[in-house]
Length: 393
Ligand SMILES: *Cc1c(COP(=O)(O)O)cnc(C)c1O
Image (tube, rainbow, N blue to C red; front, top):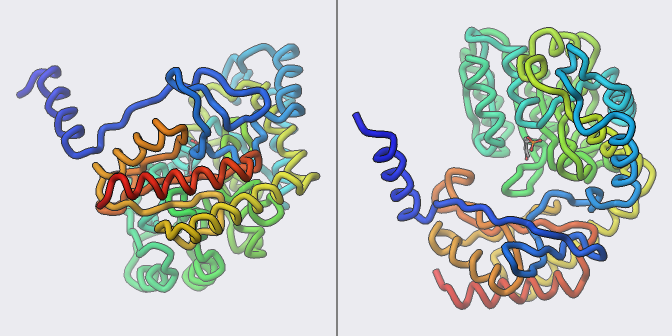
């Protein structure tokens, strides 16, 4: 038996030695004129690591809606949805999300992580099977654990591998869960093929569209991008903390699905509802996503500009067409050092290492937003080229 002090000290030392130690930086302020220009730990930098792809978190209409709601409802919701925490802002946001995605109903959760846990644990038990893409978000893997269902993983992005899994002996009810846009690679799941296999084998398809909602399919997300229906994808999870710039998540689907979640999803029932002001901010952001294509178009231009600049400089660019642009850098220690060097030079990018990504697949995770300026994007590409040269493999 080890003391707590020994146990934690040993684990931390191992983590540092492997180049996997994670540390936080503190964002002190944001330039009023440029949402990506931050003061972080006392130095100025341009952020290329957030998920606020449409820069809606600082949008004047969104901020104003949030302030207005705070004055009416106060800072918090005061209780869970089933007690007294369900406000008119929550109800209207649910209705607007259902309407926008063309589904009968929506149900808000306090985070995407909790929504995924809630869905799997409400719908599956230990006699059932959950099939997942190998590179699914950690919350979907944890969802399998909490539900008690048997977890079967299939090769990344490989619908035929899923088909083979479904053809084998699979116990109980079968649910297939996939990211719509993969959070660390930026690629899209082959949703039409996944849906076809699910239909053939009577499996329920759930798409986690944390990174597609607001961005793809005219803002309606990856499922709309592929033109799939609510029959083909009966369970859709979307988050409000990424392209919508606020916080929280929703599951959209038919009446009985939503009712079942209200009755059985413990991560819905036993937690405080989002602050109404956060829901108000999400409503204002959703209205912009619905009515104004300009932020999406600006984002698309910036993605193209970065990819063009990266190609010119021969950076190890992947195939992603989404705002998530990974550059594979290999070893964890090298990736961490490159990330540090870029930060010293005024560029903040994610240095992503295992276990978030598979061993040997550490990477810089660059994310673009609609508010990045052309000169910032060009400077980033050049900064990365210089850093890769300064710290060779
Ligand atoms: C961010 C993310 C989540 C979690 O959403 P939160 O609202 O941040 O808890 C779930 N799934 C995917 C794919 C994500 O990228």
